[in-house]
Length: 470
Image (cartoon, rainbow, N blue to C red; front, side):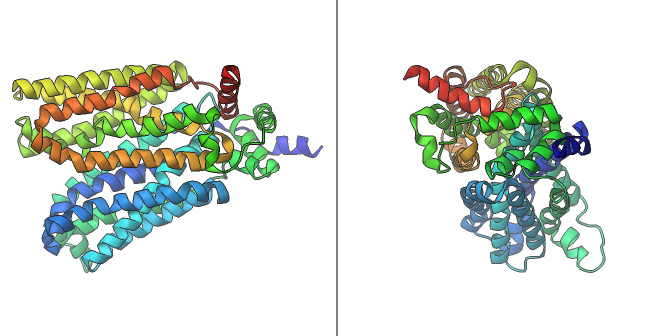
């Protein structure tokens, strides 16, 4: 009787599903905003604090150290204490960083709060897609996780626009301390604006439930059932809980589980796909877009306009993944997008090598590369790594995969200026094409098609495939 009452009290709501996933995706927005906003502040901070080249580099890259630390502890914390509480932690870190950077009274304090912001990015970059993948019904999971990537790209674009707006209003008059924040030292306003979405993220998180799969892992079946019914109805909830219970519960909660032969393919996918999504050169184009376009003959203003265009194309083509990933599948999008990205990179390198830098061709193929990345590597990577790992260690395993992504990000950030200067633009883009190519082989040989499969079904797939070989 009590079960019947529960089923009547808790009703399925598609609106609820979308709203909860959108709240979790705000972690991606803050990730994108915080990563991109720094581009407009570097020269201003350098002038105000009279920074050396080393200090300038430390200001830009210190957040990356925070990211690596954040990713390192987020997996263990999310498996132990829950996805929701760790998302709340990331929101607090984002909020503290934005306010601290805005009000910092010395370069040392500014660095400390940039490091705190990096911790927030690291935590959100792992836990947000993890939470969405566990929360979403299998038939919508690709689309819902892609919302995270969409929010990330919107965060990047809004950071560009807010930086440009504030930079163009530095002569405006404000009262009291606002004059310093939004006019005299406008970099404070640029960094401080992140506090608004961080506060919204924090407030909204108190209204979302815990991940139902984490609740099941911790034996809180009644709470998990209530959430699952609200997401997808009582029949689907009963099916999910039954599938969860039928799993082999001999799997350890230690990360060493991932190194067993049965999960070896999942481990390779989790390490290689995120890494390759970075070394294909996407962040080189986002971070160094103006410099690359200037080398192609664009003026500075046109180059900055080109960078905004790059950001907008990134947003628009992410919608392609959102509307097709659960219809066409993960593998077709990866094949089409990665293949298109490799071809675009090769052509860009050839245009630079042949000296065809006048006219729109360089920008056209950079935008083609961005478009291909936006509907494949960008969102599909997060979807796949959120699906392929076993329930018992999904948090820790995703932390490892996300750490791989940040290592790739670091290498590209550090080596791109050296490559552009030492090798030239043509060889830089050809190297990116070379680094991007192995993803086609990985998609063909290693990645299973996970469209429409439950997370438990995917976990059983690895076990059945291994038994078949044995």
